[in-house]
Amino acid sequence: MPIPNPKCPNPELTVGVGRHSDVSTLTILLQDEIGGLFVRQKDGDNWIHVPPIKGSLVINVGDALQIMSNGRYRSVEHRVVANGSNNRISVPIFVNPRPADVIGPLPELIASDSVQSNLLQDSIPEQLDSVPERSQQSSPTQKQGLQKDTQVTSSLPARPQRNKQLPQRFKDYQEEVYMELPPGFSSTASNLISTPLKPRSTTAFSSNTLIFFLKHYLLLSTRSLLESMAPTLAHPFLDSSALREFVINQGNGVKGLSELGLTALPKQYIQPLEERTCMSNIVPQESIPIIDMSNWEDPQVAKSICDAASKWGFFQIVNHDVPIEVLENVKDATYRFFRLPAEVKNKYSKEHSSSNNVRFGTSFTPQAEKALEWKDYLSLFYVSEEETSALWPSVCR
Picture 1: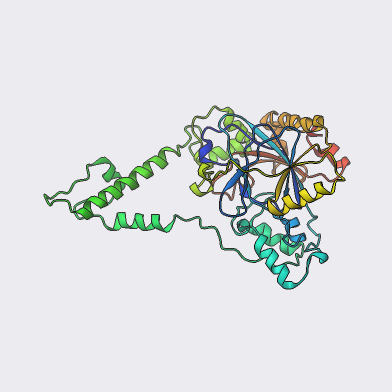
Picture 2: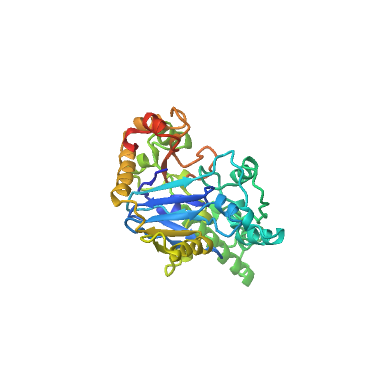
């Protein structure tokens, strides 16, 4: 499924792909030289960049394999940041169980009920209860559907939902500001911004009043800064319906927006603060394992893969015997498809594609997402050579 992330005017305000885990057994990722993939560390909320290595493939464990391994291998959250300088593409290949398959921990991995429970409790990632719905990615709905449709035999322990509300200290701060407004002052932010903050009486400021003003000005300054960081797009996209018509219905996608030469990010793509990448959470000195596959038969290679899948859930492989020319051809095919005119790409959209196995789109569920992701995608499910020849875009065959 090729995913391009076009150049973005305000990359700090949005995401290329939001934090998620994959529902797959394994995901094999080919990324270009731009980079932008980040993997979450096991503990805390720190993130590790996965730098692109020419000729390498990134492998990650999906939710299905975590279940099948009884929690020994980890399905880990990852994300892609938007880029303000370059267009980026990636090609993930999802290896999934069939929807009707029955999956569960392999019998030889179940020592006892207590061991099984402990392994799962230690390894189920926290994001299972909090990821927005996306194709081929984990969401609460998909998690439930995976357990129901495939008759998963393991009981996944519940995790507390990630709190997306303002921290309590900010809630208290906001309540204090508006509840402790001294007599004689307007309670509207517009008046406070446009008029000097001074009492209408000659009563001297008390220390509490001074603290109040300091708090109030800090709050208003913060709001002003946040608003200035979140500009809205000028004509012709004054509302969501106009943007939807251009991006989705006409098939221009995010690539079409990027090519308009925008100087400000459309408000529909501005992500909540908690979804954006905070550079202070990036751990530069760490990286996922890089495994040399030149000797497949070496037991040490197998051990390295198992260790990486257990500790990290991610690793890169080099010298894997897939010719560089093949990988470059895949990237070239992706570029060729997304350079096609909008009306040609639009033939493969949800509304017009002749097959559910071929789908062009932007974001994953734009009708349901409160904030859209800065990406387009082409989803290709391989069923047979015959269907590929008949239904896939000719530039991708």
